[in-house]
Structure formats: structure tokens, C-alpha cells
Image 1 (cartoon, helix red, strand yellow):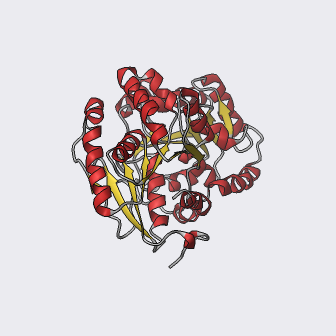
Image 2 (cartoon, rainbow, N blue to C red):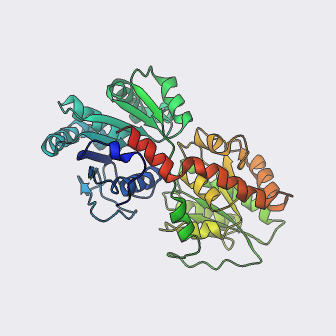
Image 3 (cartoon, rainbow, N blue to C red):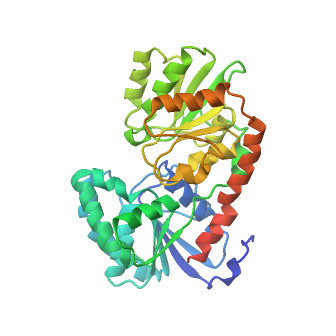
Length: 383
């Protein structure tokens, strides 16, 4: 059995519980799938995996079967009201299975992880935050409730792991953190990406040689500002009939965005392909990746696009893009919501005299920082 360097010193037969909300498409969920895959390679770790709600869009390794606590969708208020009841269930499971470490991802599972310990469990509590906490300042009553829980619970964790320096600093700007903290970036599996780049496993799409393809990957929701890209594309396509636009992902705004394309009369040039299991095929066959988010934690897809050798443009939102692109050394940034600047950057990539070979060489340097073996070793070190 292959064991990562340094793993032999892990205490034998440790019981690790991974706790998350769901495993539907998302950055945190992709990271969890990679962590489960790598943890399963170590014979000294017994993995337990609990999802709070149904939904499994990522293939799990053989032998890992999630325990799903609920099959029903719930409102934000319901989710908060049931926190202590779920925490007590988790507390009982931890005692019954002699769990040594609970590693939770996202805010609600983090609350439950800590509450379970307050009920009397003796496990090591590791919570992972994947987006800027300050977003709750603008989310009304539910935002205030979340901030109350964060300020009163997070310091009771044994370790807070952020997926970017910006996420870590954002949390510390809102409260006095007295417990241990650490930044561990999201991992990417380079070997897996390379094995999938030439394989179409989903919607067949005819990439034409006489076309240039701009691609966006992510949920179709307000925070992703998908319409910014449509507005920029609308202006560019007036003078360039060879460009087309691809969206991968689903979300509540899909129908609105499709109708907006019809209104702009660009619906024959814009393709909404939905969720796909292998986005790397589409990334590999495109000419430019664009991300327009209002806010991010650590955008996996930005690194994955770079790993596919694509030139990338991202909004300079809190908190991951600038941290990844290193002041435009590895890609281009524009102010959130500034369509004119976005168009300027897109023109630079599509029509400017940029060195595409240099971009691909640079990508090899930056992705080494996020390679899965390096990142998983960091996750091992905190157990």
C-alpha cells in the first residue's frame, strides 16, 4: 500500500470523522473528496464520513460510504434551529465509535463539531472555513445569527483551518481569535486532471478550429456575477464573430441568464452545458477562462484552469484570486463589477501580443504550490 512520506508516524488506528453539509458540486466538496481519497491510503486511519443532507456529485473511493442524516431540504431558519439536536446525535456517534478527531467543513458543520464537544465529547476539533466570514455582515437576520455563533463558538475549537490567507485575516478582523489557526490551501490532483483533459465524459460539444472559446465554471448564482461576463462578451462579439462563450454549472439564475442572452441576441453564441463530472475536457479545449465572483475563499477552478494551461482572468475579489495569481504574475485581475476593465483584460488575452508558451510554463510553477501530495501532508500534520 502506498503511504505518503511522513505518514508512518501517525498513531495507529486513529478514528477520523469528516463532517460536511452535502457533497453536491462545490469547491469544499471537491476538496473533501480528495482528502478522503488520500486518507484512505493510510492503513492507520479509520475514516468515518457524515453528510448532514443528501447529495453526492463526487465519486468516493471504495469502502467509504457516507452516513446521511437527512434526505430533505430545509430552510435557513430550520437549519439553525436544529443545530443542538444534530450536535447531540454527533456527540453520541463520537462516543460510540471512539472518534479521535472530527474535521468539519463549512460553517454549519463547524458549529455542530464544536457543540458536540461542548456536550462532553473529548475529540480533537478541527474546523475548516472556506469563504470570508464578513459576508455575513450583509445577510440580514440569518447573517447576524451566524456571526453570533462564530464569535461564541470558534475559539472553543482546537484548530481553525482557512483555505487562504485572506480568509484567515478576514475572520481575525471580525473577532479576537485566541485558539490555534492555520492556512492550508485547497489541493489539486495534477495527475488526475492530466488524465481527463482529452476525455469527454459528459455533454458532447463541437469545438471548432475557427472559433475562440471563453469559459466560465461555477454555480449560476448572484455571488458569481455571471451577468458581468455576458455583458463583456456582448461588447466583444460585436467586432469578433469568432468568439463563443461556455458556462459549466447550474444555479438559481440559469433561466434568467438564458433569457438575458436572448434579450442581447447572443443566445446562439452562448452555451449553458450544466454540471459536468469532467470539466477539464472543456477547459483544455477553450482559449480563455474568466471568473467574475463577488467573493471567494479559495477558488479551486482558477487553479484548475491554470493547470490546464489556460490564460485566466479573475475579479480581484476577497480573498483567493490575488493570492493565487500573485499580482498578475500568473493571470489577470480586474476590479469586481468593472465591466470596462474586464473587457480590457479580455482583449489583452484574446488579441494582445502575450506569450502563451510562457503562460503554460508559469502555470507549472504555481500549481506546484497546490499539488495534492504537498497539501495532504499539511492536513496530515494537523491530525
